[in-house]
Image (cartoon, rainbow, N blue to C red; front, side, top):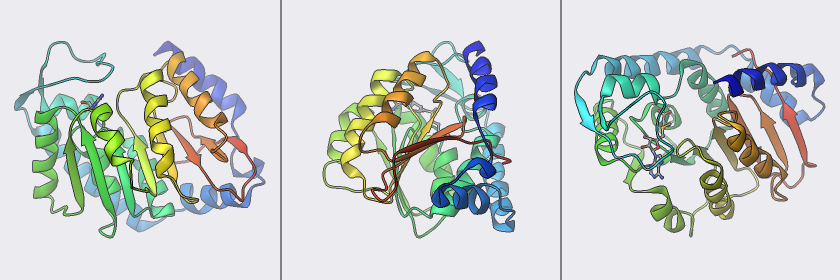
Length: 261
Ligand SMILES: C[S@@+](CC[C@H](N)C(=O)[O-])C[C@H]1O[C@@H](n2cnc3c(N)ncnc32)[C@H](O)[C@@H]1O
């Protein structure tokens, strides 16, 4: 927590808004994507809140199988759905950002690494033209996400219940993705391993989004390694998310951006 707070202060000093940005690609992303006021974005956020409130109202308990870095909020392996939604699911602030990012780039073929109860999945799958594959290791958590998202009439989500390590080699074999959302097992080696495996699925317009890049010094190290990878051209540090692009026409450049959203 202290690491994240100190990092945020440093980030505020380093970061800029769109006026400090010379790349048209990044400038347009900020002005049209991140800062624009759009009614349909509000509607997507309301739908997200509606789903989240359903989960928060659900006081039933499930047994958790944890293949990740553990949780600072929970002890033991029996958890209320309500608590998982509050502590493991995407925050409202990040949800707003993710809604804006996906509405701007319009990814169609999406992979999510870390479903939990499906809160972020619901945002990624909002565009019914998109096809989302989402991976979750805990069978009871995955089942709960499946049940809720089916009730909400999502038909464009494929749920994979398995350990990331076991399933990623197969998923990354012959697929390309427009967007990969990395939100599970926030440890340096694991994150770098998933990143390296997923590199072979990229095309020129692919986007990788990393959650929790400021969780601790190890995750910062992972993020630094990712952005220096030769295949990465543009990288954007939004503090809440790290964004990585592979556009060959773009010189390698890293941005620290403050957002209004
Ligand atoms: C932070 S939560 C995902 C939150 C979700 N994306 C959201 O915003 O609503 C991370 C999830 O990844 C799962 N997970 C962590 N490490 C895993 C691993 N090695 N294999 C499979 N699942 C894993 C956890 O069970 C947890 O549900």
